Picture (cartoon, rainbow, N blue to C red):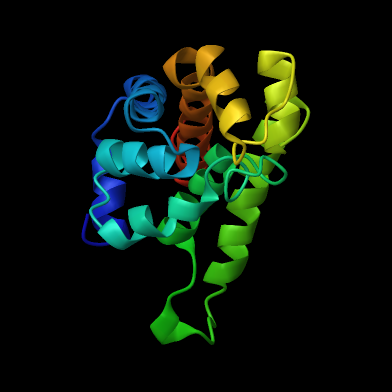
Length: 182
């Protein structure tokens, strides 16, 4: 993707239902196969939406498992989704004054994604989501807890489902922003 105009053309030529399904399926697959929820979401949406910037993917490296695998902070899927929204609509370094208000647009879109998380999970905190989907939370910095999460299906089905949902929610926010009905 070269710019927002090119991105909008890509969206206009895609079936919204198929795009949402592809976002979920690709997010699920990336988390299942590669792990790292924030990075999995970013990589999946880069593939689905044609975003070629490798720096966005790399910048998501430390955000998995509620930042640094602590599970104490924002879900990595939400962090990754916010990164994609900010990449697409946020202010740019060479226009830091941001007279156009791109920073505020990115805040607004990230807030919409946050509200979708709140509606789906009643939280956006990694450990609280884990308690819902696993029946307990984990500290993934602890090797025993990490193994317990994996043994409970964390990388095969549960966390991939959360990332898939986050990818779909992020695309829903994008489609709404672009005025494309879902």
